[in-house]
Length: 616
Image 1 (tube, one colour):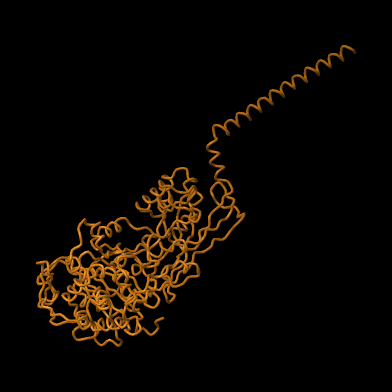
Image 2: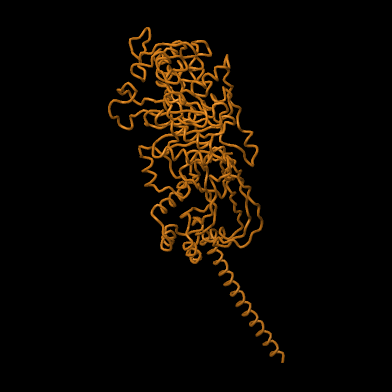
């Protein structure tokens, strides 16, 4: 019995040891498998799983603000936001971008330009996980196709967004400007990139650029949980964006479109100002372009065609075109001449059609061969007698002329919110010495007296000076902004320049009357534009020479001249004479005579504005 018991114990011990050994071996093998698997996952597959975990995480997504709207003075929308569906790719969520783009192109139509722009944006500096647009304005059919195939296209998303839309196309292109996609340089230069989170557009020109900070608004955000495919599982937290400010401008939509219609296919500009407020009623530059193309994508072929065109549609002639102002500056010089005692209103000369300085052999011709006969200040303005102003300029000298033109805003920027306006040139002795290295000569002053030579002005400056003349020297800051729901914007409007003060205020009325004779007397150069007018108004024509050409006794070229060498046609006016409501400057590039080409445009615009029953 004892041996049997010992044998059983020995057998149990051996069984226990064998089972323990098997258990240890099993545990060891399981640990080895576990360690091997951990090594495989944590080391060999680290990058793949790190990327996958990056996709399956909590995200803070920006909510772009709604861009502010832009209205004209009567509440008509000039720039609005239009719903659109955009196809984009989040590069960080896509394995093979090129393959993905090819797969998308098999489902919907993608042009080579779509693809080129996408890969260009992909290569540029950008924010991580920022969707890169591939195609805008998807059709309903394309939206449905992408929705049905989205599960197979990792990284592709179709989102609804509001994009800028300009309902009047090219009519307001230069004054409103446009928004365009934020480029790489703009993104790098941004001081506050956070404000543009979720936003792909920025104001590039015009009002859109000038008031970019106000129109943009403030972005919101939402904290969401997403899966590996980037789909939102749930929204954890949300803060709504703050919409941009709405702008109401002094612009008059009907007047603007009328000016575009009257200019037609001619190159030129029209600027109209409300003298009482300084509000810019119209600011036209022709030819123009469709600003909507900058939003949806300007086709390269069309952009290159317009850029290389001799018509130069991208030039804002109203504020960037600098031209000799010709005879339009005679009323301003004449006003200083009589007020400062260089001449009197009754002082007269005999004009034989030419003028010669006492110390110079050069002959300065009048535009009218044979001259105007006996003229005083009033008839010199009405008939635009060059010789009278040659003699007046010789008496006044450069400094007096420069100073009065400076007081009327020439040679500087006086607008409050017109983006990128040019200052023009109101020359001085120092300016010529610095720019050309020569002294100022008396002949330069003679040319300046008729708005030729070194003097250059923009249509905006001529319109502003006309408004100051209409106001009898009172300055009101020229501006586009009328009011806004962001009242702080009005506080940014600067004070106007000092008023133009005369020694004798009666000279304002007498110069106004002389300018009225330009359009409403039998001897006025633009008497045709004043025919049968139901209101009294003042005006002054100008014909700016581009090159010296031979002319007949009426100032017309004796031979055919290529269009590019024809004179620029100017006309300025304000109306009604006693209580001016509108001041206008019209320029037609290479249009010929100001009285025959530009003056009828100004008259038609004044009729449209002043005789309109529902004008506000």
